[in-house]
Amino acid sequence: MSLLEVSGLDCGYAGRSVLCGIDFRMEKGDLLGVIGPNGSGKTTLLRVISQVIPPLKGGIALEGRPLRIVRPKELAKSISVVSQNPPASELTVEEFVLLGRTPHYSLLQFFETKKDLGAARRAMELTGIVRFKDRPLDKMSGGERQLVLIARALAQEPKILLLDEPTAHLDITHQVTVLDLIRRLNKELGLAVLMVMHDLNLAATYCRKLIMIDAGRIRKFGYPHEIFNYRDIEEVYRTEVLIERNPISLKPCIMLLSEEDKGGLRWKTRQKD
Amino acid sequence: MSMLLLCAAAVSLCIGSAAVPLKNIFASLSEGKGSAAYSIIFDIRLPRIILGLAVGGALALAGVILQGLFRNPLVEPYTLGISGGAALGVSLNIVFKLYRTPGVLTLPLSGFLGALLIIFLLYLINARKGSLKLYGLLLNGVMISFISSSLVMLIMSLSRAEDMHGIIFWIMGSLDEPNWPIIKVTAIAVIVLLTVSYLFCLDLNALNLGEEEARHLGVPVERSKKILFVTASLLAGFSVAAAGMIGFVGLVVPHFVRIFVSRDHRILLPASFLAGGIFLILCDTIARTVIAPMELPVGVITGILGGGLFIYALAKRKVF
Image (tube, rainbow over all chains, first blue to last red; front, top):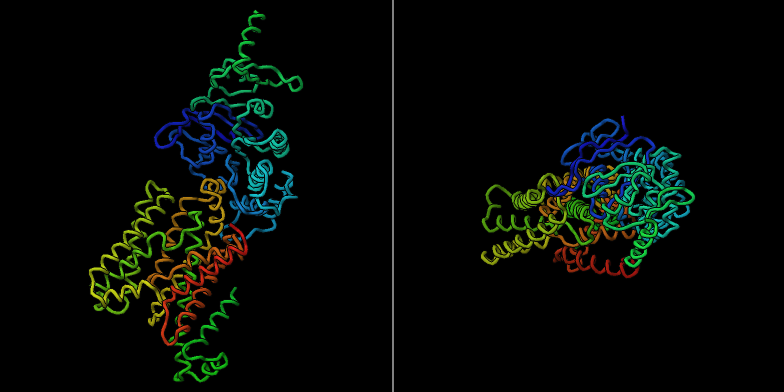
């Protein structure tokens, strides 16, 4: 039984189909990246897995149980989401992280117990934000805020973590900090991760496997080196690219070419021929 | 907070067109019925205080819930047209002299029915396909509010002078309610609704981040939205039916509590309830003492005092 199984999934907004015939499985300890051009349905996939929008056809099963019979509270204990547009909030970091405990509160429990405080504390330690705990969230930089959002997701103590472009708008320092953290969580806690990625090189560097989506369908599902060949990339993104290997990690690495450079590319290819 | 409430109630008990010092209150208690002080306190002032607590608390609570639900600091219990509906119900009642037939109860009852009708209408218009669209709800509420106030004006322009006087008097709002059963029903209903809303304080905290985020945190968003909307509407409906339209409590008190006490709904809800009660009791005390033995409409005091204090608080705290 897979941790998460998506089968024959169609979904969309107001009758317009965005995703079509999506099939994949996710096991415990997986680290999957979802790539694809803008508007191909990557975010929609996360939204349907987190039950923000209902599927039109097909289904999703969490440990063998269909998601539509899982109550919201139960779902939030298994799957937590780090969305792309973090809410602006005047809460302090600690208060915000404690909101992640919401699904764990029992029926007539209104205030956090020692256990909840402990879980929030652990989440802040894992993400290295304990020293910010009394700062208001809206006074923090983009990179720090992303860590706070991940901490809140961890406070939910989930089995699966969904992230929507966790490195968007971050400088390279924070890109690496955030992604190293995610990989560490994946390795050390066995947390399954599904994240939407825009940066193909980061996706290849950090994700074990990639799902490439094009126009609402899965075009390819596999290891980065299987997915990254220039034909697929050029067809999906309609952009010419050059693929090399990172000399240290030996992971595929994509280089972009400007209009001017493309002249050089043709010249170089001709030389090779 | 509760201490403040007790003080406000005590002050309000003592002050009036006939002053009764605090020690005389206890004296009159032991004297029992019959004395003048006893009847002033138990027949006139105490009912007003209880009603003030219930109505002020209900309005502030409805304000907190709606502002949290819509994530809009300008929403208040009257924004959604609930008060308009109540005013319409009451004006129709006055014009058609319905209140003469079955008994005294019908004036608040017709107000409450008017409010219920609006809640029902709004709910039906907006709760399509099982999902409550908050933005549409807000706009429709404002429109319904305009329509009903225009209808009230139409009724007023067509009615005779004494009826018009009655409608205006009711719309201005007052805690002068001689009928004990109405006070009791209002107070009990408000306490029940306070309890219901408190069950949703965590949902309100999560909803503060947006509906999608709340859903990620395991809040059954659609169900919570519906229950909270109906709870807030009923709170507004009960208070308007019992005391007419007393403005400003529902708008300003939640902001005050948010600035000075907490933004956390687990504290914000009960604190606003108490603060609303205190504020209205004090305003009512002022309203009936400044030009005693005449009485000002309490809405005048809540507006001037509330608005002035609020601007002062904003300038001092620089929160926005």
